[in-house]
Amino acid sequence: MSQTLLDRLWTLHRIAPAGGGQDLIHIDRILLHDLSGARALTEVAEKGYAIPNPNLAFATPDHAVSSAPGRTAETFPKGAGGVHALRAGSAAHGIRLFDLGQDGQGIVHVMGPELGIVLPGLSVICGDSHTCTNGGLGALAFGVGSSELAHALATQTLRIAKPRAMRVRFEGRFPEGTTAKDAVLAAIGRLGTGAGAGFAVEWGGEAVRALPVEARLTLCNLTIEMGARMGFIAPDDTTFDWVAGRDHAPRGAAWDEAVAHWRTLRSDEDAVFDADHVIDAATIAPQVSWGTSPEHVIAVDAPIPDPDAAPDAQRRKAWQDALAYQGLEPGRPLAGTAVDWVFIGSCTNSRLSDLREAARVVRGRRVADGVTAWVVPGSVRVKRAAEAEGLDRVFTDAGFAWREPGCSLCVAANGEAVPPGARCVSTSNRNFVGRQGKGARTHLASPAMAAAAAVAGRIVDIRKGL
Image 1 (cartoon, rainbow, N blue to C red):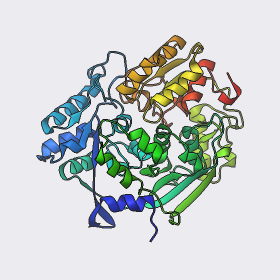
Image 2: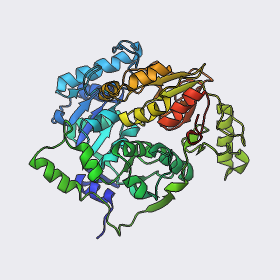
Image 3: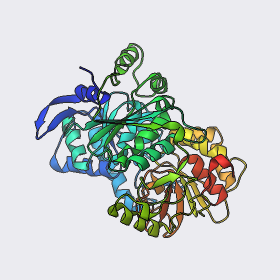
Image 4: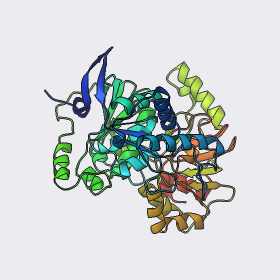
């Protein structure tokens, strides 16, 4: 009987039926950060749980820590308690903690893959919805709540219903200037933020197979924005080459055995999906969001949608509210809209390849007058590698702030926020009302598009130059 990649991943981890339409599954890796992870470790202590496999859990502070140069846990006082709880809980149970300033510290969805903690075929959980990022390596990865984290720490299991299988294929090749970020935004714009509800999404097609691993992680990162908890890409030689030699990757004979197993993690040619979508990759232009949902997105050269053209009354009202919040008018071009802030970072686009992409645009130019621009690397390793290449100097010479690794302006949970009414082009994943700060107006875009907006002082089409 033919199987999807979801079927194979599920079979690998399913222990037994758990009743109520759920299965009990084994969890291979547990990632903890300073918000949900700290709460989970506190719950473990309060309930007197033991953690029998601390070697399968890994912790790092990222959400509520300042990204200011020279920061400590106390730089943002309201977040210090979470950092201290993460430190104390990790020490008490022998969990590996990658602390501030240490090699390996970073945004949890960046440091997990780069250290080889996340590997193809593993089940991975974290108290963060963007855990689906790790599916870019072919992992079964999804976000959970802090109580579920505590349960998994104590039992190495979770109860969960198997989702239905969806496939989204990008066939053909992406045009010049189109990135994985543009592709996934375009897919969400076409299919909607509810399209993935109840599904696990397998991303595939010629254009996806041609993507490097870090772009695949970006693509899977926004799976949750389509309503699905899980998204993944079948591992291949590109994946294996990227994983090889990482800190926690297998070595020697174990590596050969692992790769042989990983090659089986793919959907059969005749596998049947509960939903199957095909998108012509050649039709995708650089994307920019215009509203307050990731599905409020258009090609940069398209006009801002008119609510009167919405397919139903509910969306017409949502479009009207979004335009009012964003201070935009329907029918006008989004390109040319003046911006106040630019943020390059987050678990979506803060890896070395993202910073290189932005630096190519910035090199030899200056941030426009009146624009505040930040670059926040995704991890200590990304930061050090970028500095070794001189990317930090490219950014600072242009007038960008070069910051310490963390979530920063993506979620504004660390005292850093875009001011009320200010317009920000952001490489992050969510443009919800207040996501980057009360009253902040966010436009999601790729690193190159964000960098171009910083130096132009307005949203521009990078295909047409600056």
